[in-house]
Image (tube, rainbow, N blue to C red; front, side):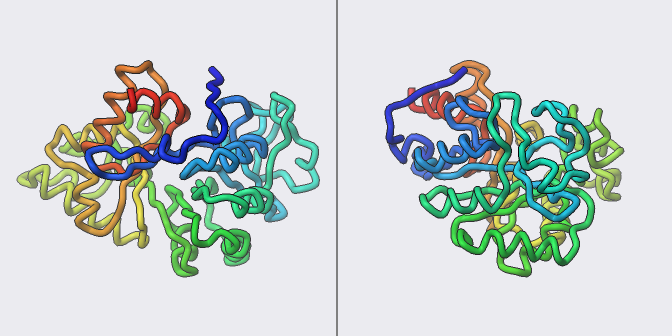
Length: 303
């Protein structure tokens, strides 16, 4: 459903005060109104023109190291073309269109758009394979014009380390090490074993008798924080709910360690269910909610 609001967007709509704390509603895949293909130039431009506080895009390195803004690892689902994204080149996708007819975007063009406004850009770095030093350098240089308003996230902490060393703020997603998402387990995404505390976790502590929930969770947080210096963790909401059921508020535990929490990805399930889930995420300590339905969520929370 396409939602339209009067232009310009009031800046507080997606940055509400909840319980006296400023929160952020992040536009997942740069979706604002839903009028444009996710990750497309038009969608990105709409977010910037509407002065959204934060938008997220997905970035792949192509075979020639061009940086394509695209979500899936294959072209088949979102375009009329086919094949693995990482096998393409800038030339081979130069005329590529989403099924809506809108062209795909490259990271440099996104940076040009973002630098004209005040929106914070969250780059979801999609490659799982080890980036070369040259690729990491290309990404750092591309983001330099908006260095004060950018955040790079990934599940592949090995690709975040060189970016952190270059001064890029990092958002780490621990999914490959630690989660409670059934769909991820079914897809063999991350850990292969279910630990004693109800989380998928291959770490030895997850299977040791006599370790209580609080001690286990705190220790695993510290283990994972040691992987890469992050200013934020991005955690799926199912894992946050499971940790809360164990009596562990991940947002508070991270805050004590100087790290913020973003919850992903909240979809529109109607006013009552969506607002209740968002408020639960805030109660758990999330400062940011990443959502495909930012306008609906903002409306539900303000209603």
